Length: 233
Image 1 (tube, rainbow, N blue to C red):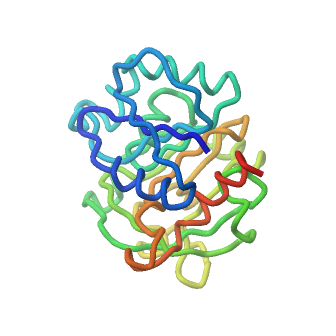
Image 2 (image 1 turned 120 degrees about the horizontal axis):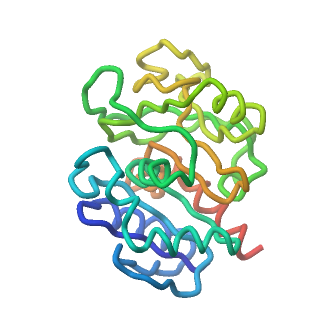
């Protein structure tokens, strides 16, 4: 699997993502600076977490206008796959490559803790190595993870099966109003969504932080293993 990681000013999770990608694929990802106006031959592009441009204006708002975003849009149009995690998810929504927006957590506080996600479908390039409705532990580190969208958009996402991950408790139960099961207050407890073509995925928590027993577990590894399977068979 040939992958690339996009770095913006303020990105700080690129090394974590690189470790996860190499751990599972065996290949080092290419590091891509946000001012690049061409891309190498790649299967997957990843927008990692951090605080692009210091979260000035809105999280991801300035990064969404970086020169490389034009290349990312063309990459998707040609059949490429994109994963955006945390700030990467915010950038993808600001660039209108994914619907909705990420607002301040309902507690108005930064969340830094473990949580649980439920896999809503396992027939995608990002989730094939999980069982449907599998529950896994994940790492959360964000101040603006409250996913919001219009009622029409939410209905469309649900109806088209584009909600990929949902916040739940350890038993896999979703509760919109539970501050532990849905820590940032996201609508429909949404933690990750897909584009209409199912090739772009955005999620708030950090699967790359749990891909090795030395990290405390391998709960996030199936996501990267799924992508490797997609491109290597």
